[in-house]
Amino acid sequence: MKEEINNNIKQKILFYIKDNNFKSAENLILKALKKYSNSSYLLELLAHCQYNEGQYEDAIRSYNIILKTSNNINHDVYFMLGNSLGNLGHSKKAIEYYEKSLLKKPNQHLVLNNIGLQYELLKDFNKAKDFYTKTIKLKKNFELGYTNLAGINEKIGNIDESFDLYKECLKINNTNELAILGLGNINLIKKSYNDAYNLFNQVLELNSSLKAAYTGLGNVLLAKGKYIEGLEMLQKGLGVVRFSKGNDLEIINS
Image 1 (cartoon, rainbow, N blue to C red):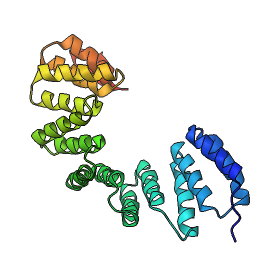
Image 2 (cartoon, rainbow, N blue to C red; image 1 turned 90 degrees about the horizontal axis):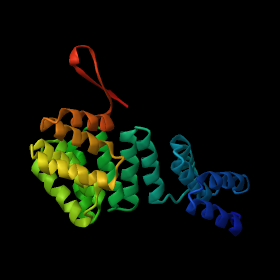
Image 3 (cartoon, rainbow, N blue to C red; image 1 turned 60 degrees about the vertical axis):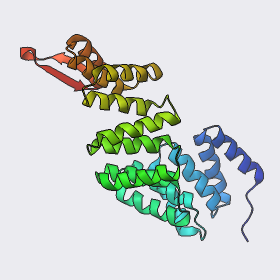
């Protein structure tokens, strides 16, 4: 018979996690595991902490121990294992575990979205589009699903569809930075420079550290013949702009 974990230890661990103090939680869990070595509950909390600290390889090891030792794996273990693998660039393996999560619990919009993301990273844009579409059909107010689907449509040249999706996202949240930025980029492509200019400035009012907005604004200004101002914006967005021999420009990414 398994020994029950001391309730005070549980509460302290959960307090640290709720406070985003993952390192303290991890240390306490490791101490508790010396006594409760077969606890899937503690191992899952440990993996959660490791993931949130960016220790993805450690998280993968902890999740794999759960897979080997537990008879009752919940869908979140597969989901978070997929996330950990995805963050390390193992897209195909991540998709395998996302699919296992869906077998345990179908119709998870976050899992569908993340499968789409991994296919996008694999440059399988049609599959990415399919999964992003499934995501917003399942969760109609999921802003990230709309911006992801809009972005993938932009990549494959469906500019009008992308434009409409960004607009739909803004109906849900009219301050969504990615949607406003996306509309700015599409207006830039369409050479609607005044609209693009206003949209990029709108984004910067919401988030002055968003480099992509400076890049977009710089490109608008260059297209309008305002070269000095445009280069200043590109400097903020892309890195340092310097003149090389012969008046040619060289942009050095930061």
